[in-house]
Amino acid sequence: MLHRQTLSTNLSEPTYYILLALLIPLHGYGIMQKVKRISAGQVTVGAGTVYGALDAMERGGWVQRVAEEGRRKIYLITDDGKKVLYNHLVHLQQMTQAGEMMLPMMETDGVA
Image 1 (cartoon, helix red, strand yellow):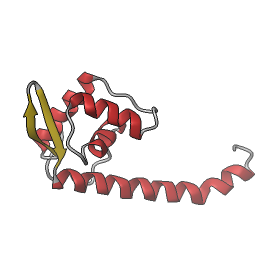
Image 2 (tube, rainbow, N blue to C red):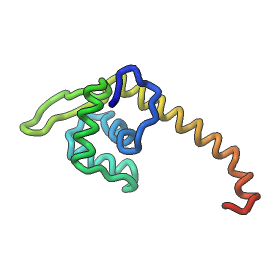
Image 3 (cartoon, rainbow, N blue to C red):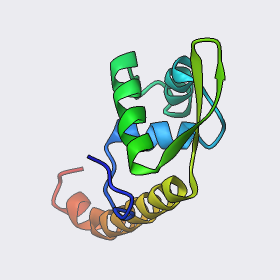
C-alpha cells in the first residue's frame, strides 16, 4: 500500500516508470506506451499492472484523475508524487555513485 507520508520509498520499476510517464496527463493505454518508450523497450506494463498501480497511487495521493474522455480516465502526477519520484531519483544517483566508486575493484578482480 502507498502512503502519503512515504516520500522516500524505493519504487518498483513499473511504479517508477508510471510516475515518470505521468509528468504529462495520460490515460491507461497512453501510460503503457509511454513506459515502453521512455524505458527504451526494457519495461513493458500490462493493463492490470497499470490500473492496479494507478488505484494505489491515487489512494496514496501520488497521482490524480484530471479528466475523463468517454471511458478513458486521464491521470497526472501530484506534487506528493513528484516528491516521491525526486527522492527515488536521488536515491538511484547515490547508488550509482557508490557502484562507480567500487567498479575499479571489480575490474581488477577480473569480474568485469
